[in-house]
Length: 392
Image (cartoon, rainbow, N blue to C red; front, side):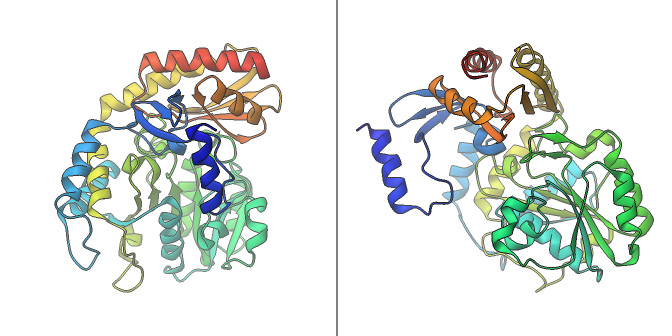
């Protein structure tokens, strides 16, 4: 029995069976490469599901987190701390609205729960969410998740949520107009990640923005997976030049540290008042120190590199005869296969030292660290082509 087998076996003995037993035990990483318990290296094209935006052991993150935890690790929101204020200020700079307000939490699901509560505080009842969308697994965020397989066992949910066809502005408009004065919010992802990396049609976000403005509805954009430069823009909604009323974030914001953020603009910025919402760990100084570092590093030249790498990756992967198309933007790509063998591709990838993900049977999702090098990308493509030759 190898060291890795012992560890994965022990996993099944002590942890809840929510994920099954992982096939690999990772013990270290550097850049976009990780090493397992047996010493085997893998190029990580998943980044902890789009979380490790700056890869593994990034020196700036190590320094920021180490310095902060050695100073003060937690104070709760009954006291102020500099990293929290600094991170919030930098987020407002990225949004371009100094009048907006930030609520920090610990995850994307919590960020979307906060958005749900903001919608409730408008006094309106209806929240419109997209079929096949994903916003989290807590009860409020799951209520807005349009995936029946994830919802069925946990019904009933908080009421008022109705679903529309993603990308169909005519359907959404008709749904709103059934009762616009009682419609609190429309929530959407610029690119649906968990369904198979499906971008919204060009112009859809702009049309939703106009619809929300017309009827005084909160436009809530879930940037949990697409944000922090993942698509080549800092926020994916910037691709269409619009500004939502509420933005939710997590994943890449902390570069591996747990953090979520809900940013509210305009009238939504004043909806939370003392006692209306809260969190013990949200706004943790250590996580905020990491986030502040990420926000400093993900600048315009950094974003240009994400775009460049993403375009190269798209072109190179698209050369495989096993690939039908490649969709998405930046370093958030969905490789659509000609056959429904994506899960087999993921398994074979591990044998070739490549970490992949299959959100559906015919799509391989690629969300590597944004700092992945050209050399790592080249090696990853070579390995993926070999896997596709074998499996697809």
